[in-house]
Amino acid sequence: MRRLIGGMVAACSFTLLGTASAQPVPPAAPAPTAAAAAEGSSAPSANFPVAEQGQAECFPTCRSGYTCHAGQCVSLCNPPCGAGERCTAQGECEVVPAAPAAALPVAPAVAPPSLAPTSLDTASASAPSEASVMKSPGALVFAARVGVLVHGWGTSTTESEDSLRPANSSTDVAVTDHSYVMLSVDGLVHVTRGARLGLSYSLIPYAAQKGDEGATDTKHFGHEHSLSAIVEGLISLRPEFALSLRALGGLRMLVPGGDLSDRYDAFMSTCQNFSVVHCEAAKGPFLGPTGGVMAGFVGGAQVRWRIDLLLEHFSYKFEDRLARDSDGNTSTSNSSLAGSRLWLLGGIEL
Image (cartoon, rainbow, N blue to C red; front, side, top):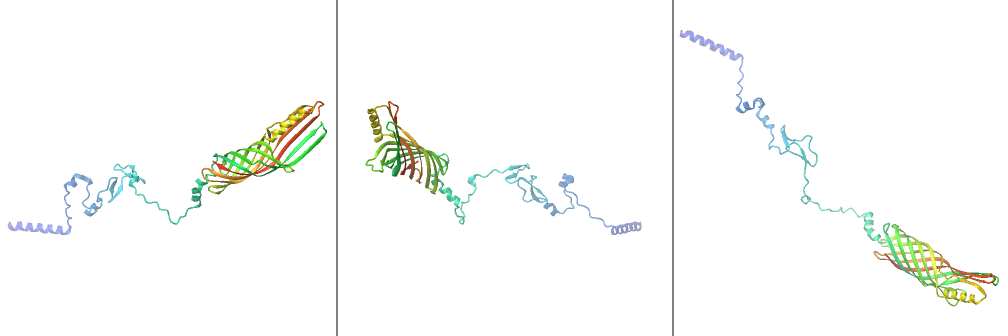
C-alpha cells in the first residue's frame, strides 16, 4: 500500500514538471494600490515607467495665468494676449496698468555731437528780432517824423485877360522854395510781412517862395496841409534793420496867409477905387494834387527809428481875381504854382 501511494505521487510530480517546462508561466501582475483603485480608470497604467510619469508635471509649478501641458507652462488664454496685456487665472486678457512716470528711469537727453544747427534753426532763432520790423499781416504801425528841406524849386504862372484895357498875357517865373520844415504822421497796416498800406498827413507851417529873376525878398504864402495814400515795401537787411521804399499820392491844400493875404487885401482895395461895379478874389483855401516817392531805413526793436529821403511834386492855384465895370468889361487874373521839394526826414515808428 505504501508502495502504491509512493508510485502515484512520483507519477504526478513527473507530469507536472513536464508541463512546466513546456509552457512557461508569466509572472503575476502586481496588485493595484489603494490610490489607483480610488481613481479608477484614470490612474496611470503600471506598464509606464516611473520616469515618464514625472515628465508630465512642471516643477516648479506654473504661475497664475499659465497651466502645465506636456511638461511646459503655457498660457491659459487662447489666442495669447497682445502687447501691454496679461492673462488672468480665469483665462481672460487684461490691460497691464502703466507704471508711474516717476518710477520710470529717464535717460539724459544728449544731442549727438556730430549734428550741427541747421539753417532752419538759425532762422527761427532770429524770427523774434526780425518781427520787430517785418510784422505779421494785420499789424498796425504808427510813425511821426520831422523833415528839413534840402532843396525846392518850381514855376509860378500868371495868366491874365483884360477887356478893360484889351490885353492878354501869360507869365512864367522860376522860383526857389523856402518852406523850411515839414511835420508828418503815418498810420499803416501790414498786408504782408514786407508790404504796408496806409495814410500820411503832413503839415508845412511856413510855405514860402522866392522868385529867381531879380527878386529880393521871400514871399510867405501861408501854410500847407496834405493827405496822401501810401504803398510801402520793406526789404529786410538785418534782423532789426530794413530798407523802406514808398510811393504816395493825394491832395494838398494851401491856406493863404502872410504876403498872400496882404495881396488879396490890396487888390480888393485898389479895385474898389476904380470905376468898377464888381470886384472878386478867391481867398482860399486852394487845393491841388500831390505825389512823390520816398526811400529810407528803418531800424530798432520796440521803438524803431527811421530816416528817409522824400521827393515830392505838387501844384495848386493861389490867386483868382475878377473885376468888372459898368459896361460889362472884365479883367481876370489867375496865378498857380507847380514845384518839387526834396526833404530829409527823421523820426520814430511804433
